[in-house]
Image 1 (cartoon, rainbow, N blue to C red):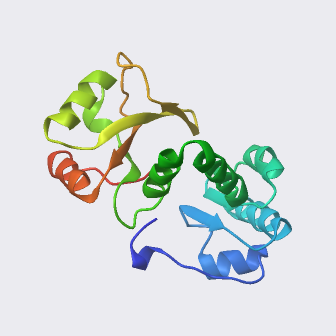
Image 2 (spheres, one colour):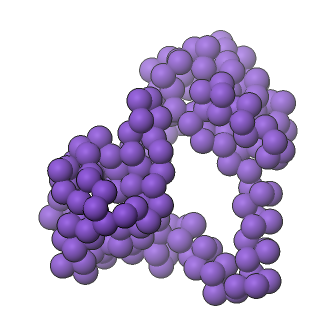
Image 3 (spheres, rainbow, N blue to C red):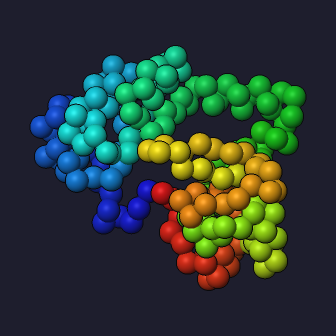
Length: 193
């Protein structure tokens, strides 16, 4: 999310006053809302959006059916840990190696990770060109694009080779630490959006 001096974590009442005073929500770029109950998550999200309509808000919910409601309120991403866990367990029953790989790429602790970088260095080139450029120095594997569509981004998983990359797009790559460093050495680009 950011450097330690750029992050602030708090808990407690999620009124507009508290959120703005404790979190400086009016000037924040993003916020993660993860209370223990969905009602508190919804109230906090609506209060954050009222304070800062441009804020990137990520919300964890226990009831996956709230996803569409929260997305329609302007939330950037809704995570449902129970839904993801259910998919992982089902996958493990039929494809245990797929489940192991998902565990590996869903944590940045060690091994591989999925990361997002600005695609500006590849603007005007095709996905095939970008993949070849990355593989040329044993860099990350390009697995998707986040395509800017107004105020949101559409995820293109495994995009076609002839897809043209725009400067506002983001590369979604599978990488380990060494590959990410090699890429940063060639094309300095901040991780994330």
